[in-house]
Structure formats: structure tokens, C-alpha cells
Image (cartoon, rainbow, N blue to C red; front, side, top):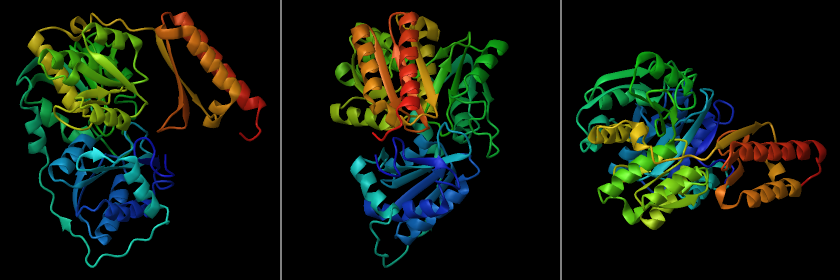
Length: 439
């Protein structure tokens, strides 16, 4: 991992880490990717226009022409990058609070490879000074990106008869979701759809599912979907308001693609965060699983290497390459609704074969991730992992997007989960307090 690029682009506090100077340097560095056109968009954060302006200035000075789409979800920006064979930059901090922001870079619709990020890092850090081109780029007038995006939806059911609520997280899907759903769903309701620059992900969206859960319960909805701030994730709730995570949505989509003969190699790509119950349910359907480190770029890398069409994370970032090369919450929500309509069943009916293992995700804030390298911490994790065997899973890692240590435990019983979580937390806290010597 470089100094600037993390697991999902560059991310940090706006005006502090994500400054105009940094954005300008990123814009200039794009010259190393050797493409004369850049498409750029942002989510609804108040800091977005400042960052877009600086990025644009840097790109123009590097001889790159720019199309600015203003507010647009990441997957739609990514699609424009693909069909225009252009570079793409999305200004977003995804599910983070509004005070954060970030920069995601694409080339021809795909996130950059590590070696491409390393190239940009050299310019951003000042290691490499670019020669000024003979001529500057120019601002190109933005076309309407919505029609080409809507064309991706033509294969889905034309009419959805259920009452559906969508939580737009006061984020970028305000630009697209109503276009997609209002013509197809007779009874579509939208919440979290009045962004003001400071309310993105604020008590709404896929990181605050309690809002849509309450709405579904109180208003007799059949199902609900919540997106994150830039629209590449989606989570679901059933008519009782119970959460349906990304793992279970992947299960539904994988089964549907297999039935259609469209699931390449009968394999899906998941991450190590995926519940063991999902893996067993998929295997029961004759579907193999490949597990990667956490991060959609690792999922996409495995999909590219194996020629697989479906993969994703339990956070709701699902990549269905039948349509796009990146996660798209709106598209995946419509795919699930279309499947339910075709089957004339509820989501609970289709998920009946899935039996999830008890699982807990604990987030420890304020601890140096270096503590995970301590021998006492590594030993307790290893011992607990061996004790659970093939009927359990332990994943302990620093977050790639927030200052957290994440501890995930899945096992046959909740008692086993609770014991493992408590033991690992205790070891981390004790080692952090007692041993302060350099690693």
C-alpha cells in the first residue's frame, strides 16, 4: 500500500488530507496513464466541488481534456470511463461521514492496478516532476450519462408489483435511482433523498440500516434497499425489517445466473469476511467459492484472473460483470427485484436454504494496528482459529478506510463467537497497555 492510495483510492479528511494541492497533484499525475480524456464526477459532499476544480486544473495542465458530470454515482462514472475509453476520477468517501472525502481513479472502467497507483504516487509525492506538455487539455461539454446507463437495465422485469422503499443516503444515487425505479415500480418510495452537502450518510443509507428497517415495518413495505454515499453498495431488508446482507444477495444472484447458464465456471468470488453458511449453501447448489482479502479490487482481480462473472462483499459491494465491471447498488437492487418478480416469491422464500453461522464483527477504535504484529496477539488468534477448525472463521485486520481494528468471528455457536471476540479484544487491549516498546 502506498502513502496515498489505500484499499479504495485516496481517502481522508477534506481540507486536511484531501486538499486542493493534493487533488491538483493527482490531476497532474494522470498524465502517466497516457490517455487524453478524463471523465470526472463527485458525490454530494460540500467539499466535492473544491476537489473537482483542483483535479481538473491539474489534468488540463497535463494535456488531458476533461468532462465534468458533477454529481453521479461511482458505477455510472465508471461506465462512462469504460464506453468512452477514458480515465475516470470519482470524488467520494463512499460510506464515510461528510467531513471525509476521497479520490478513486479508473482507467477504461476499471480501478487501477497497484503498479499504476505506484506511478501516480511518484508524482503526488514529488519524486517525479512531469514535463509540461506542449498544449493544455480543454473542458469538453458533458453529455447526458443517464440514457446509456438505463440501457443496461433493459433485460430486467419491466414492472415490479411490490411496495419498495429506497434509502438514497442523501448521496449520489439521487441522480439515478428515480430514473431507474419510478417507471418500473408502481409503489416506489424514497427516503434519504434530499442532500445538502452535510447530510450524506447521516443517519441514513447502508451504514445506518435502522432508518429503512423502521420505515419498512411502519409502512407495510414488501422490501427495502439502502445505498451508500457513492452508490456502489446496497443492503436489503425484508418485510419484517430484518437485514439481508451482501452475501445473501450474492447467493440469490449466483443461483439465478446458474439457472440461466450464465455463471461462468459455476464459481463466485467472495472475501474472507463471508459467512460460512453462505459458502455451504452455495456449494449445496453446485457453486464453488473463491475467497480473497477484503476489498473490492481484490475481488475484481480474482474475477479477472479466473474469468468469473459474479463476486462481492457482505458489505453489499457486488460486482456482476454481466452488466458492469464495478459494484452498482442500484443495478443489483433491480436485479434482485426482477428475480423476485419472475419467481413470484418473497426474498425470504428464496433464501430459505441458507442457514447462517452465528457471527459477530467488533470494531476496536483507538488502537495502533501494529499491535496485531505482537507475538501474544498472533498466538491467541492462531490458537482460537485452530480450536474452531473448519467450522469456524476468524479474521482480524486494520480497516482500509477507517482508523479501526476489525475483528470478525464466525462459528457454530454464539458462545464460541463471544468467547473468541472477548479473548482477542482482551489480548489487543492488554498488549497495547503493557508493551509500548518499538516493534
